[in-house]
Image (tube, rainbow, N blue to C red):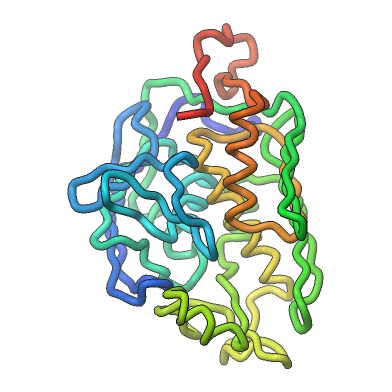
Amino acid sequence: MSAAAPANQQTIARSVTLVGKGAHGGRRASLTLAPAGADAGIVFNVGGVEIEAHWSRVDASKLRTRLAGSGVSASTVEHLMAALAALRIDNALILLDGDEVPAMDGSSRDFVSAIDEAGVAALSAPRRCWRVMKSTRISDGAGWAELRPAKTGLHLDVEIAFLSPVGRQRLSLDLTPETFRCELADARSFGFLRDAERLWREGLALGANLDNTLVFDERGAINPQGLRFADECVRHKMLDVVGDLALAGEPIIGAFRSYRGGHGLNIALLEAAARDGALAPEFVNAPNEDATDASRSLSP
């Protein structure tokens, strides 16, 4: 992690609520972010049932990441998870009214603002992380994703390839709270007008509109305000990576690279890393700490 990374775990200082509409379900959605104690992790509460924010709880990953457990689900968690992870919130309880996180404007902007409004509180327990010890790579034929060792922090390198007008875009950066705020948090979900009817038939994107999705036709973005970044699409894909990798449970020290990736590949990569023993636990900012003190498994 970077030198400025806190050595102790953090939570939010007080509860804060956001209200909107689910991008895929199309229904009113609200959530309350609440403080949680040390070692609680990020937990979703849906109708009184708790679901750990962990890759092993993912039951759907087409166009969004959905967690499930005990007959309930929490869908489209990735933009919220990205904000929590990037701003180094290790523990929080997320009370969800319904089964989907509100889309807000399709980015992480409002979740970052909510965390800023709530404030951050330090806890007494040491902060832990996963260090990538060996490379892990997976492919679905069209695209691939990999994790490699790195000395410090999380380095991200994401490349996308779509038909015109999006085309090929690539971005690389080191993840910090500052780079997330400035480079990724405002990048919106995107889609193509030509795919709308097919997605609706599949029960997806029922709540997507020009207020929460960057929509392209064959000429370009049709949103009245246009693009927030010239390469907004790859920035959003990287935002999704941050949210999906947060489902490791703790921050990752390593280098992530993907080509034509997505939620499915991101989650499968975490599963492969767990299966292959590619990640080792350690304490943040405590390189001389006995590793056995932090030992645990990436698997559930």
